Image (cartoon, rainbow, N blue to C red; front, side):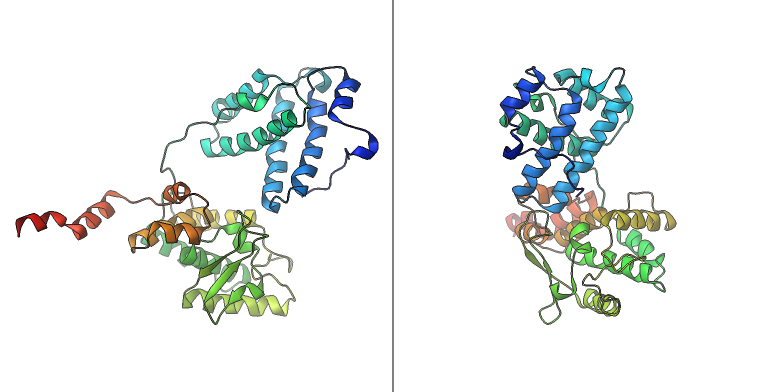
Amino acid sequence: MPKTRVKFNNSNGVTPNTFMQNFGKSNINITQFTLLHEKFMEAKTLEGLAPRTLEDHVKHFKFFKKYIETIQRTELDQIFLSKDLFKNYVAYMLLEKKYAPCTINLRITSLKCYLNWLFKEKYTTENYSLYLVRVKRPQDTILPLTKEEVKKMLNVVDTGTYAGIRDFTMMIIILDCGIRPQELCNVKINEVDFKNKLLKVNAQTAKTRKSRELPLSKQSLHLLKQLISISEENQSPYIFMSSQTADKLDHNVAAKNFEKYGKRAGIKKRCTPYVFRHTFATNAVKKGMDTFTLQRIMGHALITTTRQYVQLDTRDLVRSHEKTNFLNEYFK
């Protein structure tokens, strides 16, 4: 997370009331809006938000600032917060940039959080978050990979290089236990329990800030041993290292690598670490894993979130129906 350049605290006498008095308005302009975001980030850091959540707040706010730059026709001090400003931002993302609904909603969620904070802390007299409405998105839009597509992906990876064996191992582990890619990039050597065949997701790096242990197959453990030996040689605590340094691999780099392998394999679907996570969830249900076990493994707070990861096609439904075949009981 970038360091905060501007400090707002009690020692310098800046409070919501003095802030408004200094500017003499019941509303704030874009310049003030930008400065106050740094105070917002300080508050969220003190609340103990996960590093990933803090990074997302910074990243999504940058997108809004870029939007402001595209519409700027006057000085920023002359652009004040208004409901139309935020409604137009959503329309810009949806109609002009044609972003996917999930992308738009992520940016809206972060911005709503900031606007709610401004209103709660009395920096604005109106809660502008109410004018940011999430975009409806089609259900079941992320398709899991088929067995054949997974094999194609695995076959195009050059395991003769460090980057190749690292990315191959990431694919296998996500397919094995459905771990989030960012959580996987943060896994350290001492968080793999070879005796009990478990991988620990640390509470500090877990998206939900709750630790959990994930079962691993012998294939995953074998691959992890290889990577761990390389990490130890490079004196790195992280299992998945950057190809250039001994520091941990950036999850965004991992996502780009997955997409590269997908194109190389000639797969038309999206090929990202999260698609592999969806593939794990779907395969787990096909093999009979109950939804509550799956929810715990995937680290979801809500069962409805787990449901979104499971995509069964018509053939799966037919096979499941044939297995139950309870109608036969009436004709015995």
